[in-house]
Length: 295
Picture 1 (cartoon, rainbow, N blue to C red):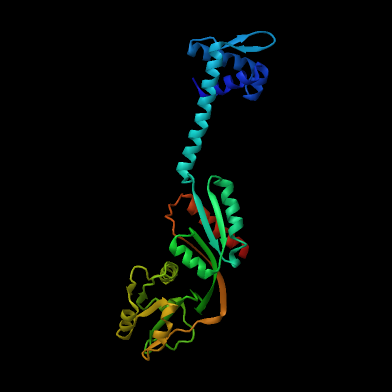
Picture 2 (cartoon, rainbow, N blue to C red):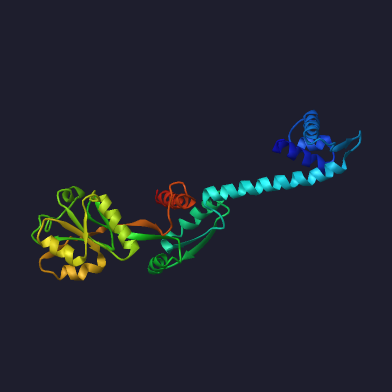
């Protein structure tokens, strides 16, 4: 017995007409007749009383019709649950916070996402950037999307406003007017750990862009400052340490070139991301939409 046979029998039981049932199930009338006969042979009961004008179900046929309907309903529910399970969509809700500058990106991305994952509920919240940071840390939103200014130390070094780079005053880069990424290649790097997940993510991205991930040394601001004075390292940290760094006579902040500032979309999440998960797909859609809007 195949599910197609059940679908054909249900169509015949509902329409009570061979030709109409055949059209509904997209087979020929003769093929439908053979399918019903095969089904009766497998069941061991006569299901249909045939006449020239109409189709009537036997008592056994009426009982089997209810069974067939229930079986097909169960099949559809099973297929739905399998889809939801494989895509991680079971009764799930995602809350996305975004700033006004990202308002041309997030709604479009969410619309595209819902067309493919209709079982996921999306709640969008327009917030100030400081509120997004707080809500993401507290788990009140799942994804944060904001646009941040990026500044450049040199023609090919870009940093968010929230980060600073500094060196010892006697460092070879201390008074260089135009610093490129290649200049950083010759010097080891220190990084000061941040309590903010958002800032820490920016630090990690910057360290990766400088190709320092495998050699970076991480410490407190005091450890980093002391280390710089005894070495030729460069250091990267959160802007919150600007005052303590600039007040130290032995250290120097590398100045940023505000004249070539530009905006960059920053997307963050506190969700676990698998490569093929629906969350990963949504993040990809947001990134692609942002790139297309800039072109």
